[in-house]
Image 1 (tube, one colour):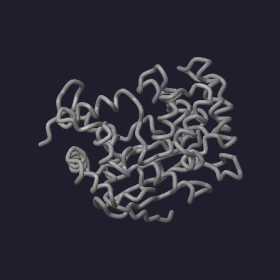
Image 2 (cartoon, rainbow, N blue to C red):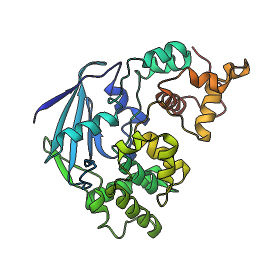
Image 3 (cartoon, one colour):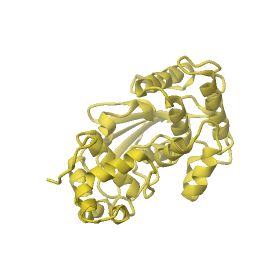
Image 4 (cartoon, rainbow, N blue to C red):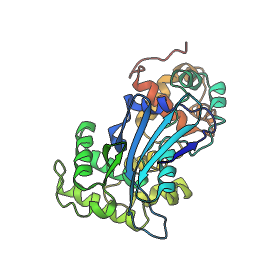
Length: 307
């Protein structure tokens, strides 16, 4: 098994990615964290010309030192290059982050969290398809329940992959998801929604690169046409499934986080637009970083004071 080297453009810490959301979130997809590496298991997106999701992969990422090269090891029976692209995109290594610290120099709040969380970049879903199915599964149930459903589906219909003798199960490819008629823990309507998403993945409507190429408003409108996908889910698919860098989510929690973190600035008459202007061209990265800081110590109703 050959090693592949991914050279980060700009600061990058794989340890920060492993710790994202208190550990590699089960909702992201199949895989695991170890003391030094991040293991991912997922269906490989096809080239648009084929439409057939015929392969899955397991990818292990490791990094000897912060900001150093990332070593990727891939186990798959085909599609190694595509698997590497998805793995890099999942930890936002597909983007040039050389200007990320400049945002922190312009904005002391972002700068403090960059220092605290090792220049964290967002960790995304493996594909728009996996994001869409994850969000639909998770509607109106707890994260723990959703993770269990995903794990059962992966065991039942996902491809089994091995890396160094360890077994990993990817989420079912769309073709295989169609074969599952009853899903323990999900109502019939959710199963129908998942089948609709599988169909959308097969006909290209959930192609990650295609969605990334569209204007955000156009991509969101297309996603909202899918069964079970409302505004919140559409935003999640586009931002967390496609890994956009400079878009802003439109949700109440992000607004509350900003108002708490920047209470002093807002009290002095600095506008929200003034604040987010500092974050360009990494507005989504900045939003995720603030949300992580909020979740790890800045609670609702608490004022934030820079150290």
